[in-house]
Image (cartoon, rainbow, N blue to C red; front, side, top):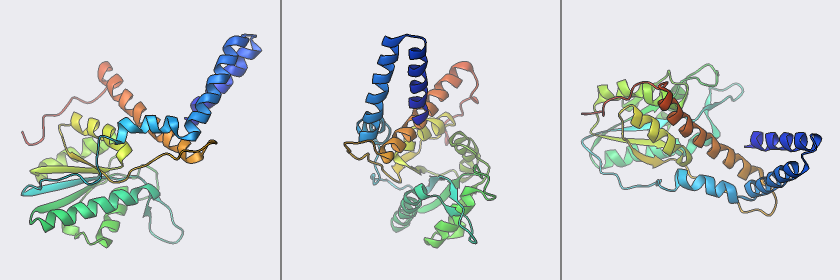
Length: 251
C-alpha cells in the first residue's frame, strides 16, 4: 500500500513539473485523503471486512468419523542459538488447530493435522517442520501429524496438499489460517477440488486514530496482498496459465 502512495506522489510531482497543475493538485489531494484514510483505520476496515467477516473463529463443526485439519503455515522466525520458531502471526493458527484437534478427539472421532509449508524464506528448514515441533509441544502426537514440506506459496499449499489428502481420504476437512487469508485460500484449494470448512486462526481489527497509524497501514497492505492474489487467480485462469482444475476430492 505504501508503494501505491509513493507512486501517486511521484506522479503528482511529475504533473507539476509538466505544468499540469490541476492534475497534480488532484493527485496530491487524493494522496493526502488516502494516507489519512488508511492511517486512521477507515480504509483498512473497508478492505478487511469482505475478507474476514464472513468467517468465524469458533464455528460449529460436525465432526465425521475421520477428519483432517489443514493448517497453513505463516513463516518462521530466526532466534539466535535456538531452533527456528513459528513467526509472530502464526500463534493464533497453531492454537486454533490444537484446540480443534482436542475437540475432535473429545467427540470420539479420528483426527489428524496436515501442516503445509516449505522453506519459502530460505531459513534452512520447512515451515511445516517448525510448526510440527510446536504442535507436539502443545500435546499433538507425532503419529497424527502430516507435514507437507515443498510448497512456497498459498497456491502450492493447495496443489501439494491434494495428493496427501487423497491418501488420507477424510470424511471431513477443516482449514485453519488467518481470517484475512481465508477467502484466497478457499479459492485456491477449491481450484484443486477441496472444500474445507474454514476456521479463522486469528482476527485483526484496525484502530481508530486521528493521525496515521502504522498498524492500520500494515493491515491495509495485508488486505491488498490478498485482493491482488485473488485478482491474479482470475487473470491467470483467463489466460490459461493456471493448472487445470481438479475433480472434487472424495468424488
